[in-house]
Length: 237
Image 1 (cartoon, rainbow, N blue to C red):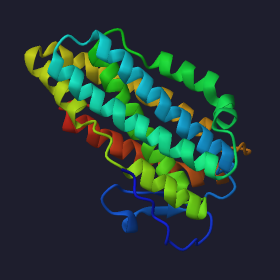
Image 2 (cartoon, one colour):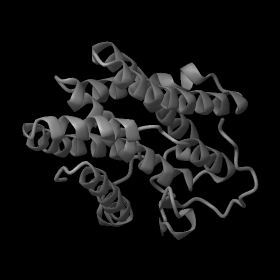
Image 3 (cartoon, one colour):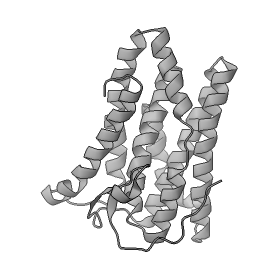
Image 4 (tube, one colour):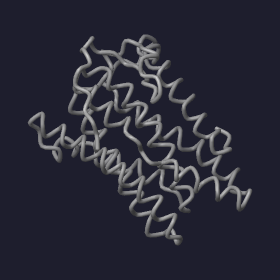
């Protein structure tokens, strides 16, 4: 059950990459000019979680082992829980969640299709990597939206139940070493597509030197977190 965090004082619009372990020690950077409007932020975040749920649900049908189906179903359930919590927040603000999400359906469906692997192991890695990076990115953006952003952060910080996915990938690598190089290559491909989605979420700017200087520290941290995820699976980032 998601527990809302109501009491944090709004200190203005900032971008910070919030650590799942140490929120108070996160790197901060002024991002006011590039943070999207609140409907864009909520609509994209909610639809992304729905997409992760849909991909994982489809995977359950292709995985033969019952224990593996159950593991993937837990991750799917966690994504659905986050989606439903974000949808509830949109409704609480007086908006129609379907209409708020609708503008992002086509580009995010295209992203999901582009990162869907030929084999279940590739798609499992896709969800783990893309969801991890984009959860981190939206956690960073959440610092720009006061109390609403804090509530979104609490939703995204809830357990994603993706450790079982890591274990399934590790088991595949242990059973056949060829998976290591194939999945490492696939993981590197995923990064480019995922960063494009993150950049597209930002408010349009001139993308000049000043904008780049605001963006790059956050994307540097996204890449560092990605490298840690890959390392945890024995894969080269």
